Image (tube, rainbow, N blue to C red; front, side, top):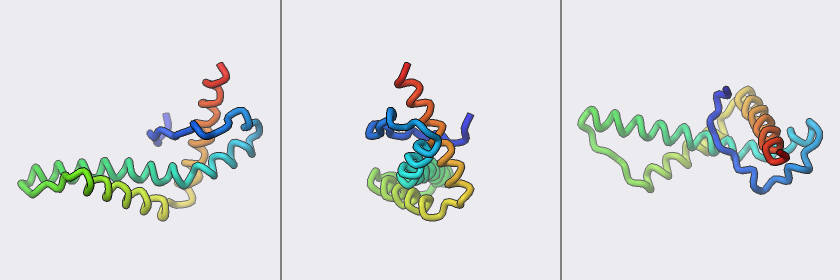
Length: 109
């Protein structure tokens, strides 16, 4: 089980063209920036929910407008993309390759 729990959009990828390890890695590198943002937004959403629960528990005022939440998530996503370590990037790239392989295999059966 991977530590990443993120859905990746493969709808615009020609899976049939992915044959070699290099093909998979090149496609993963292309997808990496968007996936980093999406992962960061996922973290941002969880963080937002936790903050709201803590504020509610302490009697604080909730900032629960959908636009504020979305802005927070987008900002967290961009920050995560900019600040991800080389190790995190490599782990995520490996995960994308793994997901590409699984998706290609599912499509061919």
